[in-house]
Length: 199
Picture (cartoon, rainbow, N blue to C red):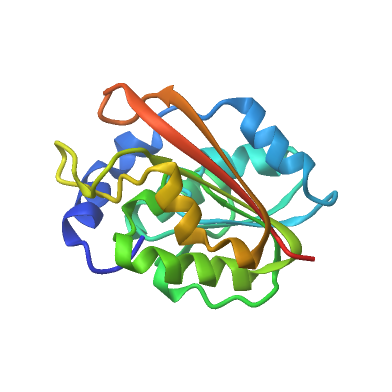
């Protein structure tokens, strides 16, 4: 996450053990589609890995996963789960250049302030190799705000996201919408974005 929202980071510091102990909430089909779009043994960067559940699943599919999280407490939980190093990385500090075949950012970029999101997406674009796959999910809405835990969310709609990604930098951008839930147990409209970097 971005480094300037102390309330959101404090939530994950306090709730790290409980948050990391949850089962995976993402449908298996989306994760498998992402994995199948990558070369065998492809290198994946996971941003906002939380308790490491998705990294664990991607590793089981034969991918070489670099797990990261902006919360030191969650990174420690994920490291225990995965039995391998998990780096503390704020989105603004991503500096990789053409290093990954895929970037997996499930339910984490939704905490990036709206004005900062284009810059973070540009950093992800730079981190991908040509033809690389970028997956991210967002809680949909009309305006940024906070949930009952005081976590910040950018709450975008599909049109705003498509504009923010910038179509000229990607071979294609697909956005799916579905209903789901989250840590707050509230019914949630989700947007799932898959973008392919130009080859």
